[in-house]
Amino acid sequence: MTQVGIIVGSRSDIEVAQRAAAVLDELGVMAEVRVISAHRAPDLLSRYVRSASDRGIGVFIAIAGLAAHLPGVVASQTTLPVIGVAMAGGVADGLDALLAIVQMPKGVPVAAVGVGNGENAALLAAQILGVGDGALRERLAARRAAQAQAIADDPANEGL
Image (cartoon, rainbow, N blue to C red; front, side):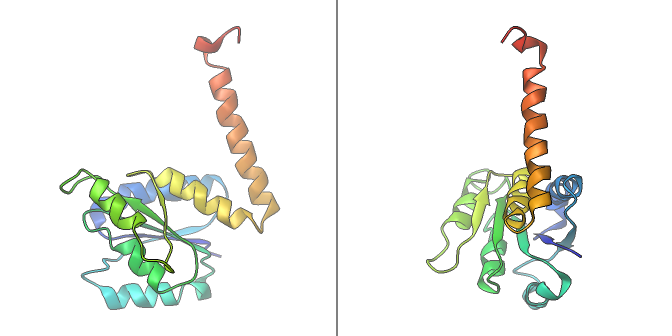
């Protein structure tokens, strides 16, 4: 059962989507990746978003640069959580895309993570799904503990 739908507006952003999917896979969360432009294929995007629940999608990650309309368009067509990932580029090297994502009108929220940070988008999606899945919460906690242990084990931290 697919749990996270990852959408990129352009094939040029697929690497960020793949990194997000890899984090989800590590956590045992199923994901599907689609390349659908909000501007060039709006009908296809609408069909994809509206059929999401039928495929078991509980959270969307929408990755876009420049005008970065993709996360907002997805959010406008569903009540499922949408996490936007802005991509670097454009006139302000991703800041313009980030602002487009976070400045959604009242009533149509989109969460946002750092520019190009598909990994954090995946972790946030897993945390959202983890609200109703204790085993997933445990896997997230174990990942976080391993991260902290790796820092503690760094020779630069010897004696602390």
